[in-house]
Image (tube, rainbow over all chains, first blue to last red; front, top):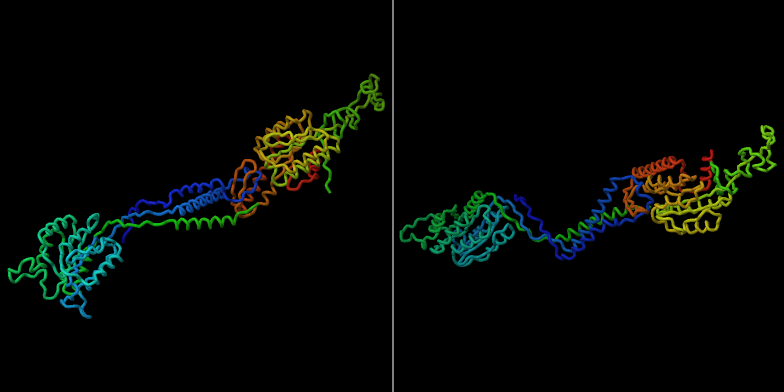
Length: 335
Length: 278
């Protein structure tokens, strides 16, 4: 459960500051009670009555409050944007989705018919369940194909994330360019405080060779950002897997067996890394459940609360107080 | 039917002029004073034969009587703001007119001193028999806006004659007891009849429940009361306590106060004088 820590300062501000001069009117009840006065020959004879004194000052205070609330309402009181630090059990999770056209095929490598769902559909369905389960995590979505696609930065807004995941149901694009995608996923952690575990979940059905320059950069960045990497490899039937060994030594290169080499690259990054080879939606589900189980560390993060208009509350308060004062007015008696 | 106001003195007036009250002057009265030789009081009609026979020197003894004299009656009225509340102005006016009639009937002289923050000349009337002027003052009082404090009351003694007079002091005593003591000390040479209009009716009319705001007529203070039966009882008790304190203070100066409740009648004052003479 997220819980409020330091609530932050109440940053109150007003739309039209000059109207605050009207707050001087709040002093009026100090000078006039607003009640009909009756002449009394001699007040000194009246015995002291603490209850009456209390009632008098309470009424005076209420009247001052009413005035102040009205003036603040007129001036347009609002609470400026602020952030609240919360503690979540979870992580910053970037879902990096492969949008290459092969993702639109089923696990069998065919165009999906009514019975089999495509890899991307299965990934969408399971990932959105995953997002639903992890209530307290920050999620981001990035996709990549030939070029990386910026979809949704880290946010706690689950609706936005669900929408972002659903948005990947549009027909997929051309090729797989995993290094650009990873760079973008890593860039999501820029300017984010390191408050808990950082996770990149790479969902892809294939890999591509990473050129040497990108490899160097990725090594540095992954170290810097201290991410954990999970690779959900949606293996199409009869395609080379992560752990496949080339039969012919001549084929043992990054171009021929990108999955194997990408796995080796990830393993050599020196960060926690886990690869899951999923050949069916069930296997994918198990992999996701595994990740879900692994990542449950507490997380500090700042929740941003947008500017809130408080003038309605002011008017409401003034109205309530006025009603109260009016009630008291009905109990007023002329002698 | 209202009965005319009557007053009587339990002391002897020193006034020279013959009037209706027991006096100190020797003259044509009914009250025997002493015997005098005929040479000192040459009135052969009053020769006391028995005393003359018994006189060892053989002279004629004449009976001398005390003459009935006039007395100066003053009404010192508090015209401060608090006296404008309730029916106090009406009581004052009626009292003044009743006194004017009574004084005219006895052949005495009536003076009036109205005091608020200071003693204004228009509220000052030296003792005299100007019945019309008194009626004018009473009419002016009817339209007068009472204001200010009663601080000038203790200056009123300066306008009184040195000779002992009958002084009606009409004030609601809405000032500290010490101020009242100072006032009474200045009036000690006179025969003072304190007439104190009471605010009891005002307090009895307070509601049992509700919020009431009062402002003081004299010092501009304001107080809001959350009325409830217990508080009302407390207020009435405080009022009665105040009356006891006032009575105590007046009696310390040898005066018996007369508290005038809502209704004024000359019968009350007549009753007061009958009780006092006894």
